[in-house]
Amino acid sequence: MIPANVIERLRCADHVVVLTGAGVSAESGVATFRDPDGLWAKFRPEELASMTGFLANPERVRDWYAHRLHVVDSVEPNAGHHALAALERLVPSFTLVTQNVDRLHQRAGSMNVLEVHGNLVENRCNDCGWIDDAHQAELQCKTCFGPMRPNVVWFGEDLPHDVWVQAEEATRRADVMFSIGTSAQVYPAAGLPYLAKDHGAFVIEVNPDSTELTPYAHAHLRGPSGVILPELISELTAA
Ligand code: APR
Image (tube, rainbow, N blue to C red; front, side):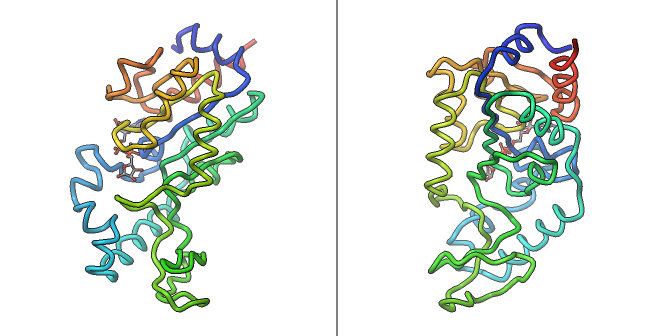
């Protein structure tokens, strides 16, 4: 059951902003990072998701990202992804800021998606920024012969500037801000719900667990996003 005040806030909202994390893709079979069975329980992030790790062993990093690309190619968006695509069509203005790199939001039909941590389906030249399809698995840039690497933001790297500026600008305008399937630990993305709240937004967290954000949220819908979000859409569209 979705609390009535949440439905009411959504019905009155002009601009809805959603921040998603790996938990939204969990029900599609894509591992999260910090859950007990998550990626960081098996691998060391500094070795696989950093420039240092890439320079130390580029083949290992490229193989790991090629494996992650194969995983996301073989799964489907889940009901939570589809519910967010439906929500975008139900509100006057909608921005989806995702930390996820799996493109499952876009495959579910979400249109206004800001990928603040990049994506797995593109490789980027580390020298000139040239973009190629990651399925081509080119090692060298076809333009400047620099090293090709996943177009994913690694630890210690800046987020794509223009994308981040858009995410902050949308967050400042939000009437309702969701934080869905994220442990709310990795900044600057984790700071967006607080920024929204500071600008008057109603903050809703969707997560089976509590996070650092939970005490600051106006509502915590405790459960898997693949269950909670379709229920929210159903109640929002009920007569
Ligand atoms: N529905 C909703 N939330 C879920 C579900 C689910 N079915 N399953 C797990 N979760 C929650 C977990 O409780 C946890 O709070 O999803 C969250 C996943 O947290 P993380 O694994 O830390 O993933 P995320 O928050 O996206 O990590 C942020 O850290 O390693 C970097 O760049 C990486 O973008 C990533 C960033």
